[in-house]
Length: 92
Image (cartoon, rainbow, N blue to C red; front, side):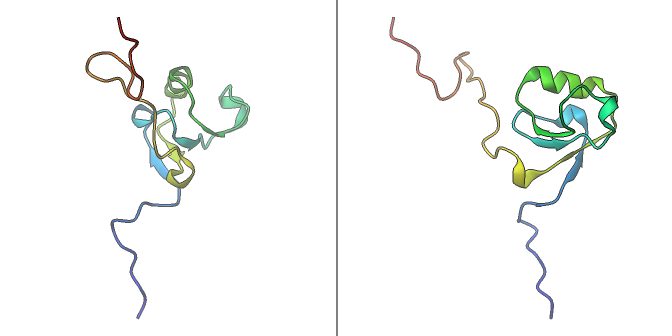
């Protein structure tokens, strides 16, 4: 009998994702011709808000996200007090 993979395992293959759902740290494949985007490669890890804005402005319905190659930590999030998470404010 074949072993069925657990539904709790993270997918290893590419996942079609809407550009609005992308985040810094995701490894993406734009899945379009090189002349339709300004990046050096159609596959890369998103490193900035500027790259996110460019991808969202390309008019693509979806891009492919590779979870196994993405940064599992994701981008640093701002804490509610406005300080970056993981940083310590200098004493006054």
